[in-house]
Image 1 (cartoon, rainbow, N blue to C red):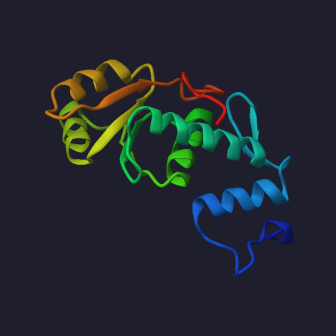
Image 2: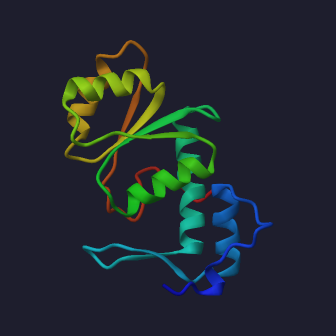
Length: 157
């Protein structure tokens, strides 16, 4: 396998998620980062950086404190990717929940993960809302199409 030297990260470069995203968005803004296998939709490094910033703002507007926890109950997709990387790049702890979990297992994970916000795909949102409602602390549930180009209430930051 040959590695393109443009893809190599210098040894002195920062190795955090936001630093890596920023470095690639500056160096190769139009380069494709992601291709959706089912739809063929693409996401460039610059689009990913901007999407991550919007997701970080969305999470903060939902009351999640810096360093707080968010969970994902979603299959793979464009929105799933942006939520995962956006939350991590903003310093949130991200907990992807196994979609093969039984409701009681999912309840245990959500209760013990300290999450304040759950992103759930439309097919999982009713179950997640029911589970979240049975947990003593408040857990917000945001329904998101995993392949959406933008999440509801996502704003330019």
